[in-house]
Length: 609
Image (cartoon, rainbow, N blue to C red; front, side):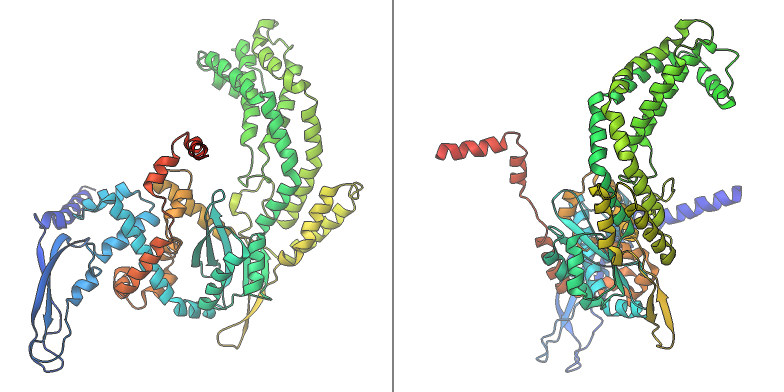
C-alpha cells in the first residue's frame, strides 16, 4: 500500500508539472504557416503576404498567441492566399477558443450538467480563462456544430437504421404552462435522437413540417408511438398515411383515469382542506413530540413493544402518549402514499381521508382503556380525538369516499388488465418498459370491457360509458402486433415489436429537465426553454457509441469532426438559431417587474382620453 501511494503521488506530481499552467509562466507565441511552399501554377517559392497574431485558448496548451503566416505568389497571376491549415484544425477561423474548449464546455454543460461557474473554474485550472457569458456562447456554438454534423450524417444514419430493419418513431413534447414546447423525435431501436423543434403549441399545422423533415432525412418509419394529442395524431396521418400508429399505454391510462376520477378526487381534496385536518394533526404532533423528546429511551421501548405485540413492563404510563403520536404520523404518512406513478394511479388524499376515519375509530376504542388504572395517562389520546371530531362528524367526506371507491376499483382492474402502472408496482414512471405479449393483454382488456358493460349500473352511469367509449375509440392504436420486416439481405424475415409506451422519451425529458434545473438553479424551465437552441437534445446522442462512430465519419475525435464543417455554414446556422430565440429586451423585463405596471399603462391611456 505504501508503494501504491507513492506511485499515485508521483503520477499526480507529473501531471501537475506537465500541465500548461506549470510549463508556461507566460502565454507562449507559436507560429503557424501553410503547408504549401511553392506556387502550383509557376512553381515559384511563395512569399509572405502578411502575418497576424491572435490569442487562442486550448485545453492542450492553455492560452497562447498564434502567429499566423499567410503566403502568396508574387510572380504570376495566381491571387490565392494560402493560410495556416494546422491552426484551422485547432480552432475555428477567427475564434479565440479551440475546438477542444468548445466540446469541453458543451459536454460539461449538457452531459455533466455543470453550472457556468463550475466550468469557468475547471478551465481556469487548465490555463483557459473565459467569462460566464462566454460559457453560454460556446455551449450554443457547440450545439450548432453538432446539429450540422448530425445533418450531414443523415444518409449514414438512415443506412444504419435500415440495416437494423428500420426505425420506430417516438414523438413527445415538453414545456411548462402555455409557452414554448420542445418536441423531440427518437428511434427506440437505436436509441438515437433524430430531430428537435420548438413549437408555440402542439397543433397539427405546426407539427407537420417537423415530421416532413424527419421523413425526408430518414425515410418512412416502421411505426409511430406517441401520446393521445389530437395534433400529433392528425399530423402522423397526414405525413405518414397508413403507417402503423400506436398510442402510449401509460398516457392512455392516465388520461382515462383523470376523466374518470379527477372531479371526485378534487372534491375530496378541497373538503380535506376545508376541514383543516392536516393542520390540526401537525399541531398535535408537535405538541406530543416536545414531550417525547424528554423521555430518553421511550421511543425504543414503545417500538419494541408494538413489534413484539406485548405491553411494556416498564414505561407503561408513556405508552398512550407514544401511541397517539405514532397514530398521527401514520395518518399523515397517507399523504405520501403511492407507487411513484402520480395521479390518477396514486391517490394520496383518498388514502389520507381513509386513515383519518380509521384513526377516529381506533381512538374511540382505546381512549377510555386505562392501562394503569389512571385516566390521566390517556390524556394524550383525548386531544387528537377531539381534533378529529370535526372530521368524524362531517357526513360529506364519507359520501365522497363511497362515491369514488367503485371508480377506483374499476380503474385499477383496467391497470391490471393492461399490465402497466399496476397496484403496488415498483417500476414507477418507467412502468411498461418491459416487453409483454400483446395477445393475452388484449384478451384481458376485452374481458374487462365485457365485465364493465355487464354491470347493473352501466346503463345509468355516463362515466362507465365514457370509459368504454375511450377504449373503443383507441382500440386499433393500443395493441401492436410484431411488425414483419425484411432483413437487408432480403432473404429472411424478422419481427420487431414496437414499445407500448413512450417511456423512452419520457425518461429522456425527465433527465433533461433535471439537468436544466441543476444548471440554472431554477425549478421552472420556461426561461431556459426560450433561450436554448432547439437541437440541444442532440447532445444526448454523444453517449451512444454507435451514433458517435457514424457522426465522426472516420475522424478520431469530435474536435476533428467539427473542424471539417465549413465555418461560413456554421456562422449562418448560428445566426439563424440565435434569431429564433425570443429575447425580451432588458428594459422591458425591468418594466414588467414593477408591481403596478398594468395600472400605470391604464393610467396613461386614461390621461390620453
